[in-house]
Length: 210
Image (cartoon, rainbow, N blue to C red; front, side, top):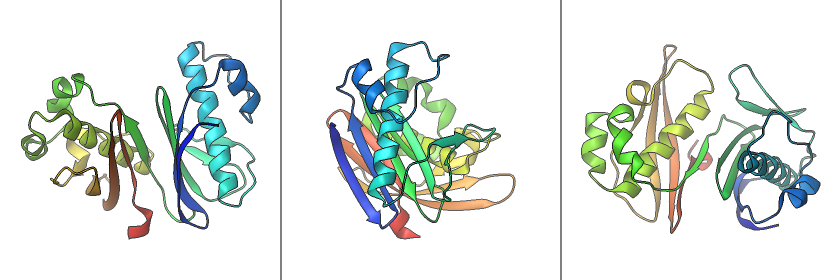
């Protein structure tokens, strides 16, 4: 299996990335669950199957037995039979997943693309726009970070622009981010990590900081 990286942060916590190189038949055999028939796009089916296979691998690497997962009314995934929190992301040809025994987690992987500059004003506050400038990679970090925060929150009703904020940061190959979720219920501060690779940006919850 083309596992790009598996990072264990605690006994039942960690994250992993997988590069999809298998055929549909291979992934169908590997996946612990069949892909739903309503997913008709070939690429989406590959991502779904790879995601289920990766989360099973991550769960078993954490010393647990995989019993499948379910989604709540907001689409947030949960493991069957365990309280461990999980998060999934896919951006073809990559799939990534995170698990933690204590807290809600969010992980997101994207490729830096020109379109991020075009939509930036709709998702970023003025101070975030000023910090990112015209750097597409930095814009991608902001996007992934806000996606991760949204997944941590796990419910609807928030916008990237008004409720999910990231403190300005100095761009490096790997670094920490300070996020803030301003929900109707309360304000939550979240520690994130980011990693810059040649063809993608990854942001995930820094579970070591809690």
